[in-house]
Each structure stands twice: as C-alpha cells, then as structure tokens.
Amino acid sequence: LLLTHAYNRRVIEVRPPTRAELGPVSKLAAQLVRMHHAIDPKRFMQIEPIEPGYERFLAHEMEGGAVVLAAFVDGAVAGYAYGRVEPRDWNALREECGALHDIYVDERFRRGGVARAILAEFLARIGSDRVVLMSAWSNVEAQAFFESMGFRKTMVEMTRG
Ligand SMILES: CC(C)(COP(=O)(O)OP(=O)(O)OC[C@H]1O[C@@H](n2cnc3c(N)ncnc32)[C@H](O)[C@@H]1OP(=O)(O)O)[C@@H](O)C(=O)NCCC(=O)NCCS
View (cartoon, protein in one colour):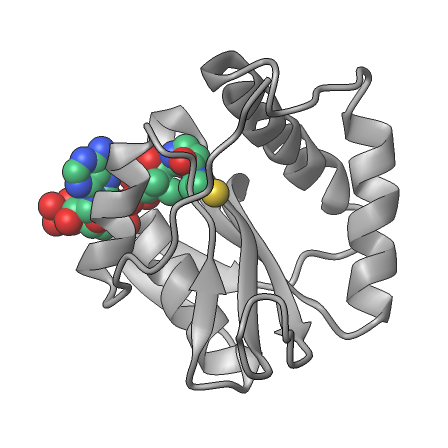
C-alpha cells in the first residue's frame, strides 16, 4: 500500500523503509531520543552513539511484525513512525492494542501534513481500532498533533529523582 499526499504541491510517499533506508530513518530516531533527553535528562536516557543500535533494532522489529513507516518527500526521508501491537497488560489495565512508540518529522518538513500522512497510514496498518501512545509532559505541540488525529489524554506519568 502506498499513500501519497500533497505537501506544498510536493508528493508525500509513505511506506515501510527498505533495509538501506533504515540508515536515514535511524538519524531521525536519534533526534527523537536527543529531544527527550534535552527535555528531562534524569528521566530520558541517551546513550551515544544512538544511530547504529537503533538501525539494528528497527530492522529486528520489522522482521518481528512491527509497523515501521517512512515518509519520503522528493526522495528524502522526511519522517518516520514505529509501533506494534502489544498484548493485554493487567498493570496498565489495557486490552491488546496498537502502540505507537515513535513518530518524528524532520524540522525542515514540519507543518506540511507529513506526520498526518504517516499516522494515517500507521492507523490503517496496525490492525487494531485502539492505539495508545506516550508523550513527554511538556511536548504540547505533539499532543496538539495527536489530538488533531483523534487521540485523547488518558494517563499522567510522574517521576521522582
Ligand atoms: C509532532 C510532529 C510529529 C508533527 O509533525 P508535522 O509533520 O509537523 O505535523 P502535520 O503537519 O502533519 O500536522 C497536522 C496537524 O497537527 C497539529 N499540529 C502539528 N504540529 C503542531 C504544533 N507545533 N503546534 C500545534 N499544532 C500542531 C495541527 O492541527 C496540524 O494541522 P495544521 O498544520 O493544518 O494546523 C513534529 O512536530 C515532530 O516531529 N516533533 C518532534 C518529535 C515528537 O514530538 N514526536 C512525538 C512524540 S513521540
């Protein structure tokens, strides 16, 4: 399945990345890790270098059935998402559902509908009507984006130390 959308009259292509394309995808994944570490270095770990391990991790996850999607604009990787179906979790009181773990759009491509295109394709592929995600408390921009896509706020994580 291939999704195309208009972005400033350019085409956004959303599809699973090839193994070779996981290189540029992992660069964006590393930015997502560094962004969280900058928000709260005590809570969000950052173990450099991030890219090589993330690339191997995503390849392994794809082999295991996870949904990994990349958005391409003019042949460049503009953003990506990663998630998978998670089983029933009694601690979280959460039935089996889709979990969106990562979504990130390169700063140069933001506010052009790239994340909307990626998330729409993710929701079509994940195979579950319920999808849960976590967002850093202060990341109000991402929360506005998720709310625009039909997500509601359901949990608050608190950290001491
Ligand atoms: C959140 C993020 C993925 C949005 O990507 P994007 O491609 O710019 O989003 P889109 O252009 O598809 O936005 C779709 C809608 O979401 C909302 N939205 C997106 N960014 C927003 C922002 N900064 N402030 C308020 N609303 C926003 C708007 O309703 C927007 O529609 P509009 O542009 O027509 O008003 C991007 O800002 C990002 O990568 N942030 C850093 C990583 C991150 O926070 N990831 C999520 C946490 S895991």
